Image 1 (cartoon, rainbow, N blue to C red):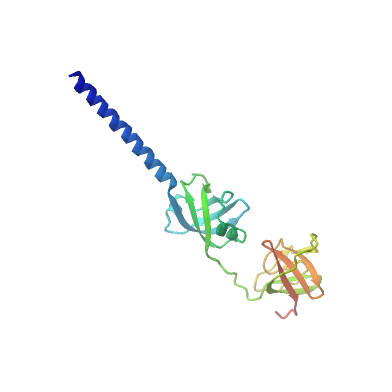
Image 2: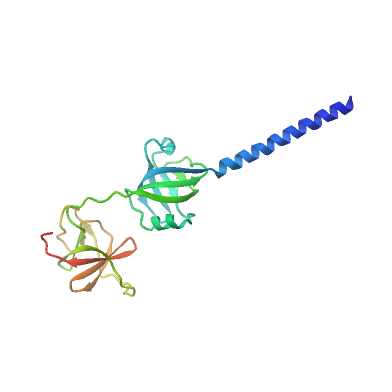
Length: 206
């Protein structure tokens, strides 16, 4: 009888240990699950993106604002996008684990962010800058100058609508906070999103 009791206890222990082992494997699988969702970028920072999940996504049911940490992302294409990220972009975000419950909610385990669509600014006028009493218009060309003085000649401090023409010095029709340098008598270069763009002198008839 004692042998039967001992055998029964041994079998029970084996089943319990097997169940614990399987349960541990399941937890690991859940932790390693990769999840993707699409969202609209609301704010861009050096360390995070504030996004609004698109309607219909599971993440939207958790929160309408999510702060996505970007500090640990090492994937090359994601880093290339983050260097040019801007509000209004639609992006796809890949992450591990869950979403921290706060407001805004937080995702601290993102590993991939890629551009799905970019909201183009609707300009009736091309981007323009008024500097030194002259109007300069965007050529769409990036500067090829590699060695330059690190001091800005000026900074854009006021802006008008994209449908309007700047009329005051240090004013643009695409935003503020951009530094610029005079290059030649007819050109300036404006520093936008870590790149220098060439603007040429034009008449004010747009």
